[in-house]
Image (cartoon, one colour):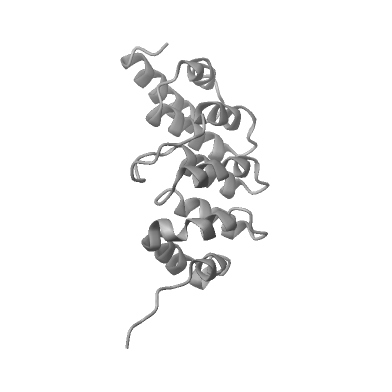
Length: 169
């Protein structure tokens, strides 16, 4: 007897329930590009957990259309959704060769400057400091050296030092 592959839309819906969430995430990653239309549907789901976990899947499996679909989540009401949108949009380490159609740097700068969540601000700083070397970021990163949050200052210091090593000023 052969087992049928899980249906991507059903897997996205399973992201809403805590006991099925992680297995559904793993199955969606395993399905790869076949799951992308369903994952994009998950990005606009009413349940914030589905939006968050759909964004998490896109850190592993993505295409240009899916990466562009993350941009509205940068302003999601839920900080966890914004955090994963920042990470998945900006991170190239976990994905196959996918050219991001979005100029990510202005979005990261915006999250650093206006996001109410320190965790989102830290993530945007980390991504800006490790995955990019863009002169537009230098003034923002330097301003962060005076932030009250110690972790944010550490991430900014690492970024400023890396940019200096690369000759980006």
